[in-house]
Image (cartoon, one colour):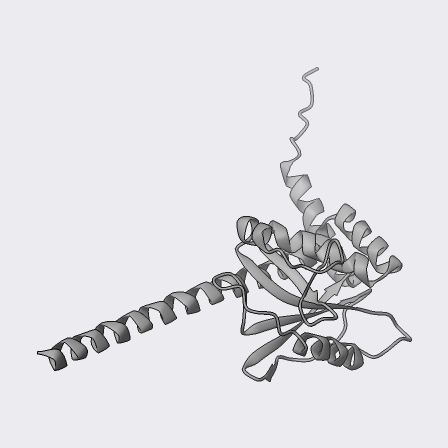
Length: 216
């Protein structure tokens, strides 16, 4: 009888383990999708919205922390709380630029906690590869305990902010963690902008009511 009970318990536990693993994997995929949607939305916003473009160009011309803060604000609009690695290997808030120890607010207002390392590429400065390597080394130092349920554990984002488009490294897998590189352009190439502006002009022309001549 005892063997039957033990066997039944093992079967139940195995089923629960599979269900929990499925739910966790599903949550991780959702967080990753939200983060990548946020990055794509940011780049497209810079491309089509003059105010957004101007804010990002101003931040780029000031320093890296300004880019980090703007990026964190945008990601939070997509329910993603972005952070970087603190000197003590914990988390740093990208807006306040101080240590993130109390995660109560993070859990209350966001649906995903994501590690990001931001670098500013300036022509004549360190190469893209050098910046990406530095960012990955910083990210690899992260050793804070995982915030169960909302922290993205298998993906980390290396964000290179540049004036124009640049070639960035592909995904790099280290210790079962994928380092995905993202390029945010604060002054997208003129050809891309021209296409968007031309499309907007055509759209406005189609919506403009036709003027009818008055009978004489």
